Length: 207
Image (cartoon, rainbow, N blue to C red):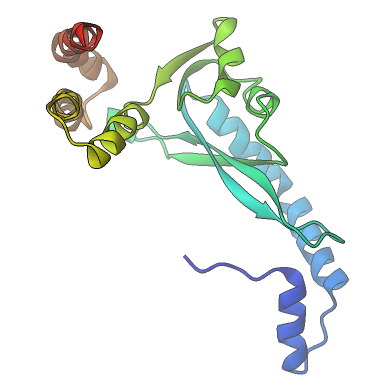
C-alpha cells in the first residue's frame, strides 16, 4: 500500500517542480471533496448499520496537529458488513470513523443506531453496548487463539498444543460451512461446534 504524503509535503514537492500550490489551497480542495462526498458517506453509513451483523475493529494512527512537534495517537475505527461467507449476494462494505482517543464513548456513539450481532475483540469500551440487549456480543476466536499461540511460541507445552488443536477443530468446521446459507450454517454449528465448545470449556476448567 502506498502512503500519501501530508499536504505540506505535497506543496513542497509541487513547488520544486515549479507548481505553486499552497497548503491552504490544497486544504481547501480536501475540504471541498469531503463536503461533496458527504452524502455518499452518509449512505454508506446507513447501509452498513442496517445489517444485522457487524465486525468492528480499530487501529492506532499517528496524528500531527498544527503547531505541535510531537504526534498524538488517534484511532481509526472500521465497521464491516460482509455476509458473503453465509451465501449472501449483497455487497460488502466498510464504514470508517476517526476518534482522537480510544474511549468507549466513540464506538458507543458510532453504533447508536445499530442493533444485532457485533463481532469484536474483548475491548472494554464495547461492554456498554451489550448491557441493554440491543446488541449481542460475538467474541472473536482469533483473538482468543492469538493469546494461546503467543504463549506456545515462547514456552511450548502439551497444554498449549492441545488448546490450539481444539480451537483448530472449530476453524475446520467454519472452513467446511463457509458459503452455506445462514440457516444451514447455524444447524451445522449446533450439531458440530456446540459439543466441541462444551468439551473445550470442560477441558479448560479442569486445567
